[in-house]
Image (cartoon, rainbow, N blue to C red):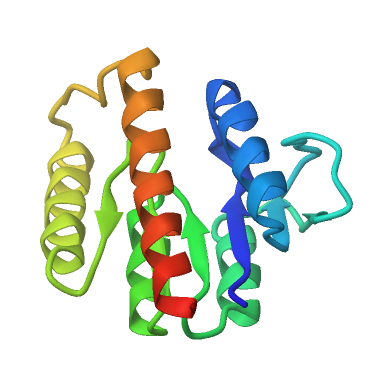
Length: 153
C-alpha cells in the first residue's frame, strides 16, 4: 500500500476536510511534514512530523522517506520534480497531477519566473486560492485514488 505525504507548510485550510475524508475512507497511512505545527485533523492514520525551520527541510525529509508509488501533495514544484524522479506521484493544491510528461515544463516555467523576479521585475503571484481550486483538488485526488484502487485489485 502506498503512503501519502503532505507538504504541510502551505497546505490550504479549505483542503483539510477534503483530504481527511479521503484518508479515513480509504485507510491511507499519511505523514504531514512541516516546520511548524500543522493539523489536517485527528486520525490514527495521520502522523505529524515537525522538521527544523529552513528552506527545503520539509522537502528533504519527504524525499528521504518517499518510496516508489507513494503520493505527495505539494505546491512546491522542485519537490514535485524530486518526487516524480523517485517514481512516485505528486498533486498540487489546485488539482494538477504532475507527471514525467509535464514536470520539466512546470519546473522550467518556475525557474524562468524566479529569474525574472531576481532581476527586479515585479510579477504577479498566483491567483487567490478559492472554492473552484478546492473542487479541482478534490476531483483530481478522487480520480487518482480511484485509479490506484483499480490497479491494486
